[in-house]
Length: 423
Image (cartoon, rainbow, N blue to C red):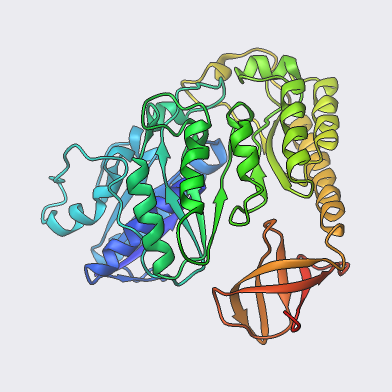
């Protein structure tokens, strides 16, 4: 069967669908990019209004394409949790996403899907090293209930994959050729086999992974400041840890953070960012910010920009607030006009680009550990240990580590690297 897969949303979503794709190919199915498929799978996202609208557009497009061939559409993920199957479109909620290969194998009549209770972690490992970086799911769910966020309603309470299983899967991924293992989850700081995570269990797990044999590195995904413990900060010094941390912020205003129900304030955020930078001076700190949250004033926005500047953030993922049904923020007063949201978003994006250029300037003339990822047209692209993109003007084997000297070239979207032949 020819299957087309489209995935929206977060790194965790991508990790899950990569595993589903691997399992489907192992069953003999062909993954195609064209619309000449027998089955279409949409891995949906409902975190923002924009992503939900994109999901609905894909459903419409794929259902029409499938109808022309007598095909079917499976919608998995967060949007599927609140939609009903209709016509040739069938919905598979998050609880059953790992069962998609089984559903396809056993579902002779798509009106009666063979679903049963399934673990959130029963995904096949993507054992084909067609890339050098792979997402490894270690955690799912969230109970923080930030006032704007729909994820706890879609993903449920926190659950963690047993450490022994994570370690085994990481070793197998390295053995199959992956060189950068990205630990993913909804809230990886809550990772814990005993219950509520406090960041310590994540540090212990990452430390165990760093002790495995082979040539690879470990990359953490987004984490809340309160889960960045001294043990985790110390671990970031390890040669196998990517020196990049996405330290979630959302706002630099204490008043807005309180309305968001975020469990930290601006002073706490700055203190943690400072401790991280003290341990790893050149660390690549990135974050995400919501602009236009209900009641956000120009003064609140200014505080956010000043905090980002003081914390030394190198890049900001900027989102305009969009109310999600069922969340506390959806009913909050004092909505910010769309024009103001747009203007603040554009200002922050412009600031972020300047901070990114300033951060990358510190790599002028420096030696870096470069992981080659893709060679094309006599040029190889990849990332250094600080998760900064580098391009080398020669063709190199994929999935190898090289020492390079980097230069900053105006107008380039990456550093220019030259292989150090004397090593």
